[in-house]
Length: 255
Image 1 (spheres, rainbow, N blue to C red):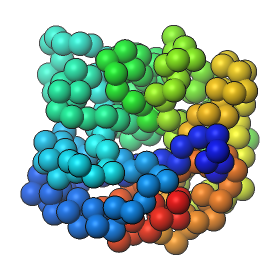
Image 2 (image 1 turned 30 degrees about the vertical axis):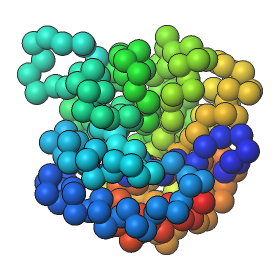
Image 3 (image 1 turned 135 degrees about the horizontal axis):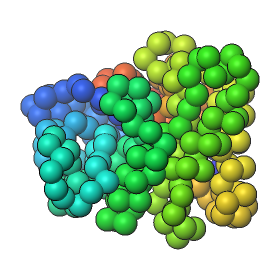
């Protein structure tokens, strides 16, 4: 990563884990482990029911709180959904959009991802936008085409000023929750492809200023090698984010 040009960000995606009580305990364990880490932004994206406790536990610390999804409408007959304004009023700063599990299990498309991105940015949230290929697409050698398409469609209507509040997470679907990890060179290559897409759309300066994370089974053991790559500016961390000591080690490696 190049900290002179862009911010290092380590974000934890808790997925459907931790009750409100467990949330308080986990964050309280994490706080002293990362309190001196000032050169890396730390984000925890927690389930909706945990947000209130997470915001309270992280108050006056260097830990930001994020959500794992947001609806594209301001309000209405969308049972079970949460709007951007609701998240803002709860104290949320970041939101993950387009995670592969949302695409795979809950019918997210490139078009609905774009609508959610615009809703979140227009409301004042920061977006962690996820893109990535499935195993068959990598085997078919169309990774570049897939991530380029996903990135371009997700950012339709997003101007250069709005891009400053967008983080992109490259998460190869075949490496999420499987224990498989893209090699550091593979991660760097695809993050570079995404940066080239941004350069074509927004110019080289904007592209160089955008944080691009890697999000496929990054952990305390492999994070240093991944984060040493020039185009890997942080991580979207799954399982390891539930373990304060492991997550803290990843943050320190990003320092």
